[in-house]
Length: 420
Image 1 (tube, rainbow, N blue to C red):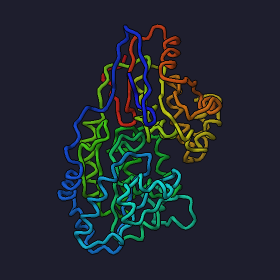
Image 2 (image 1 turned 45 degrees about the vertical axis):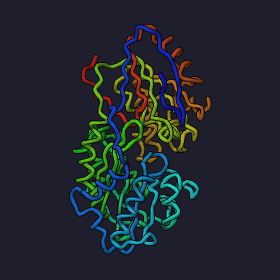
Image 3 (image 1 turned 180 degrees about the vertical axis):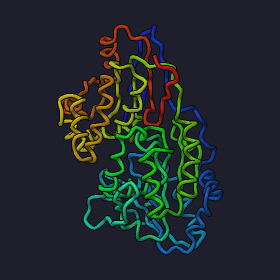
């Protein structure tokens, strides 16, 4: 087998006699012409008038994701600018805002990588920085008590567009839609209050309706105001399967229906060993991002089983508070108890989510960006490569009968159809 790792692969071989399940997004073909698909979506908006919603705007902001999301902005944005130009909105009236959330702000040298060189040269590009003085402005409070703080550059615009990728999300069910605004351009207080819903049983992977975290985000999106979203669904080759555009709720839900057909995969039984990759760069850029792949695989592994996580983690942990949260206890249970006993804090929540997997399965990490000291803090063992990890795992699982391989775990929702 080979599984994505950074910008390459890790390879390994399993001995005969094991049942092996490959759990990956369905092999759905990408569209023949990605540019034509974006144009089709914009010309057939769902739930509103699409680009016409922005006619007469004086200042337009387009929110995009940072490098941790492989959104094909270089395909989407030139078409968007063409459509804006056609309704007399000039390039100099447009700002692209990188919705970095609580990630590090995107530096200017990354802008051509995020939006494409053509767009970076055409329009103003800036990055959200949730901790910069004066960047956030208050908007109000949601019905669930979430204080709403949003980037001032977004609020100052009278034309507001969100661009994103609909992908499985372990807290809000599926990403994109209003999440690009509320989490991508929100303040820490907003993101913290929203993500605090993660301890509720309905705030889970793949669930949108009745999910308190997603419903909070969608309410805030309506309160702040969104004129248009352009969301895409990608296949396992990062090709566009479908684009949707229009109203931030209606178009998003239409996209989620397509994403389910791609991402949700039936699994016949729980397994002894899972071999997992978040999907390569940028989804394995650090442990903060790679945790998602670990979580997606956890439900299909037997209690006491082993997960091999192949994640390069060139940026190490990716978040100091994640590491601090892991240091709050000597066992996974103690870390989770510490998190639940204190006020919710972003970054620390990743330790809770990480340990939610560790209480079920042991983890062997293949990750060149994680040293032995950090591995000990994360309560995982390191292996130099996938084959060494397989040998170690099977030594500890001498009676293993079934193995699952999740090469694109962050984009896969395993649906267990029979428990054993």
